[in-house]
Length: 465
Image 1 (cartoon, helix red, strand yellow):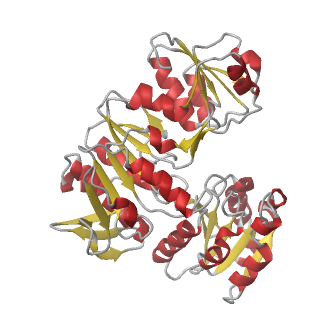
Image 2 (cartoon, rainbow, N blue to C red):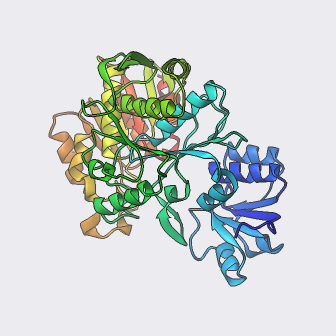
Image 3 (cartoon, rainbow, N blue to C red):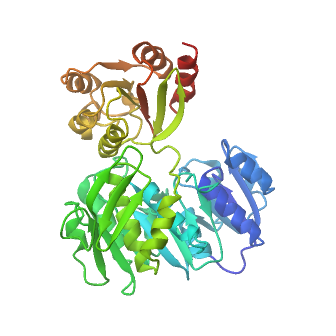
């Protein structure tokens, strides 16, 4: 598939961060590159334009009339897409993005793959910055935008490739998890919970795909697992490669202890060294412990790691302060799984110990729209003072017995005696929230989407009071 005959490559779905970055890197390698997408948004629109990559607006068979030597088909593309159908009809070479990454960018390099249900983006960003700060110039692919970098992906000539390993499926023609393609020398597994209900039937199915990932670690590599996670524990009992456990418990080889949580930073120790982290919360301590273990395995010292921690600036959409208006702080967070919401709320309570916190949640993922976490979702807002939930999207597309019950959810949250509201959209939520918050309060918005531009709308309305 990846022979020397390949001179021209077309990307169907080029607007994604990773697709656009890979397209630009292949252009730099001398390939003729084209692409198409339904819509290409900023910052990738400007990025592709700066690289002078021809991008066709919309999907059409005519976009492939030049019969490219290889077509890269994005994860969001499904059967029925005219370009996917053309590729199959004409028997063109095609592959997924993870396959492309493996063959053109990862093979032969030292691949560090960060996986798990929660904390992947933060851990990958922090690990990448540790390497970058210490002059190792790694290639990287991160499912977010780290504030220390200008983009979420970069390909270099160094021996290091650091990549966020997603367990979501690869493409419509390859239902294996993406991380199966990434040839891990070091595999980090932060934690393991049920998620992606549209892909996986149950927790056992999640465990199975992670077990397949673990089988790929070579005997001269390293498997790093969260030793505090009961779901993950059985998967770490392997003998084909070295295994180390990290966490807060005493049984971990890389153990954090003497934790001290501050409003803007955290201190934790490992044997013989005390680390200072510019992130808040227990989940981030575990993320940092994974980074310490991986970086030390790759030859970096504690002082080198700490030097990078000192200058790490966090990630967009992870407890990101979008602005302060009318004395109210508005925060954006990508959290959409009950555990992620709960841990973020705990971290926010450390950061804002006396402030009133209003939590707004948009249930829009295929998991949170279902009743899988009906009880856990209500419990995840325990640290909030006010809870507002937006109308659950596309419930009619689910069987009644599968749907999250919004009435029950609000009753469960309301049983705590805290003010609650279930409102149809961002505009209604903004109108409600501006009436109940005061200067000094904090509003955190949990969503993995754009949520109708709610952050800007909130700040604008609050600024007019």
